[in-house]
Length: 509
Image 1 (cartoon, helix red, strand yellow):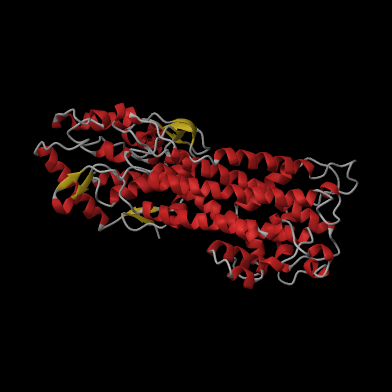
Image 2 (tube, one colour):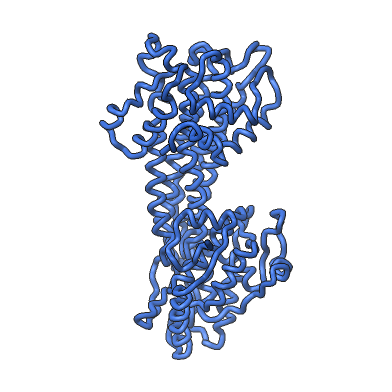
């Protein structure tokens, strides 16, 4: 079933299209688009003064434009605003932006012709993905530079991502796909570039990864708790009910489920060293739960934004009006993405601390230094923790909230901006780093559990260790670890560790 633009989209719809799902533009969305277009055509015919239709843009809003120059004006805004720089957004991110912008236009308050939406839908369905550099957006008037680069191929300019990810001229890609560029009419260039869909798309895809990562963190923490001869006592439901944050409760429930029936835990349940574990073991639900709650808040914000009209000016077909407003301002998304970024840093940091405890013979309860036999001759997993520490430190730098900054632009007309695209990119980069940190902890935990033999893990953590061992052999002596890290990171990013645990337990929260 195709994802339909102009009807309510879920965040999962966006992720599906980013990964290649098909899209359609159906009734009644098409009728709404026609109704809004009729308003714009009357505005032009009656020579009304409407921002971006019969005036210039930004600080040039008081400059009148002859209706006869409407097409030139709209072509010019796309070409002149496409100033984004830096590395390209991924194919998935660019597809998500294209979907979200088509969706906003199809909601029927932007005043474009249906042909524009049709072209965007066909670009998605025929895998013609614009090349969109990731830097340059201020996050108000939305993601102007980002969205202008997205729109360039639609008017015969710019580049797309070729089959191998290389940059390709849009003309050749359009010809191969059987598509034709459009000549923009009144309001359409402005409608293509004005909105929050850049930060929103990057944010939705980052959030999907973050939500999976929070579940993976519980899985990996359970392995480490076993391997470090920790205790499951702090996760007692009676304790957790006394502080009922939803994320904490979900994480603690996962840990109880993952550790249920663990022979490793049973083997030392009455040992003296079990008075209290270190915080990185004992407080996992509290830290993981805070990240989960931040994910929930971010999801709520992005769900609203996905189906919101962030254009300007906005067409009100029922009243035959075009009104200027501020819905393009990205602050709601910017604040949510900054919150997500901040909450993910402790998730990575506590993972590094657990890995560190496994490697240090003073804190590992009997494991060999750096999780390798003949340590000294072998360095074992020593440098894996260096990498984890480096990534966590980088995350702390990336977590500086971009939304607290603002630089005036457009001769002071646009005097407060959100920097929401920066917030979204930083959250995405923190997620990517945290995925590697969790992969490094998973490698250490699997090694430590093997070193605990003949003590057995729980069914769930044993299945996770087996999934790792299917890709990464036991570290008997020093070897090149880069391939091991890449394999473990892939297991984290694909959700394979969660799937392995859930092959034994019920679904994790």
